[in-house]
Amino acid sequence: MAEILAAIFTAIDVLTIYLLLPNVKYRFWLSLWTGALHMLFPLIGFHVGEWLASYISSLAQNISGILLSLIGVQLLLAAKDQRPATIPVVILAITTSLDTFSVSISFGMLQLRETLLICSMGIFAFLFSFIALTLNKKIPVALGIYLQMIAGAALLLMGIFSLNL
Picture 1: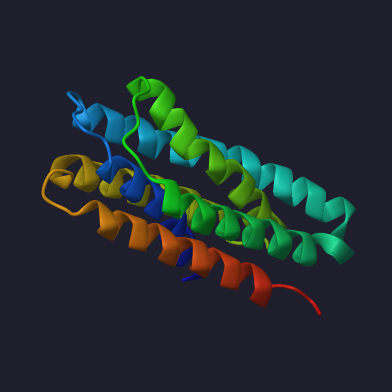
Picture 2: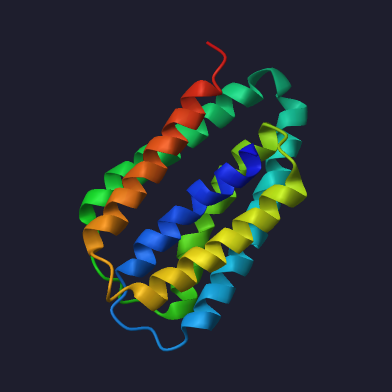
């Protein structure tokens, strides 16, 4: 269950960013590309996290908690400066997916179930991006910012609760 919640929280930023895009011609392909990258980057990050955990197992849980907390803080800080993106679609898919690498390092350190996590991340990223791109003219921008704040707070709390204090 933690894997599915983690996947939802990491895909919410795609929903919030894509809600702000003015016009996208290839919604389905951007969504598919984003979903695939939300599987590739976490797969790499997950294995980096597992590798790091084997070398620094006593610190792994605290490091993952700190990483999750910092990413949550970053999402919260970025929520106040939202504006429409004007970058190429492929670059947008990569930039919205790249943060899943660092998040999945933490999940690899926590030794979550890899297949469930990676598949969930891709599926939710695809669904959220397609929904956002399809409905972006109908949903208020403020809702996207609130969702990003919720995701940031959730990652921050996940990080804090995983610390061994």
